[in-house]
Image 1 (cartoon, rainbow, N blue to C red):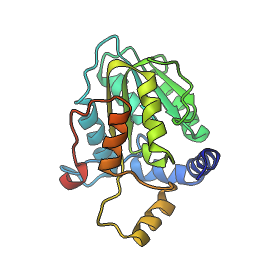
Image 2 (spheres, rainbow, N blue to C red):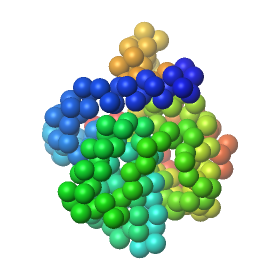
Image 3 (cartoon, one colour):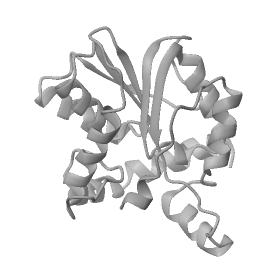
Length: 218
């Protein structure tokens, strides 16, 4: 899949009726996967995933944060509500999701601390070393070139910054037929593996300090 194809397919998917389905099923705040340790509710599980991710961040009042593939901006709103960070930016391809996110941010009075940017995370519209912290939740799977995406993340993060993300990975036990069904469902050319992410993160200069298998916890 070319870069142009990936952009068109991803925008078309999230600008479609799937937008309303995610709002209905996930409660209109998030649409990433959740942690179901203490609940069977999608909305609550997604909030638990936000809590889990944010607990791993070293946020200060000076922190400038980027959410890579921000969807409804549920994670940026969670961060803005619950931390003292200076600013959170959500970068996302879907114009429909971004319009919805901006409306939600205004309704909560958070639009002065959350900036929603239309754009492609494989070619980020930001300067080098612009962010202290990068986060992402189950969004990087759409990239046709995970190495390029990781290098873009390395470019825009400040030296010594934090990058904490979750993603849906391909497991070794998955058959090719099963994998193709998954790819077709989530509109991605391929899913990454632990090994691929470790390789690309190391190549880009990141130091890997921890990996957590959230799937086994559920």
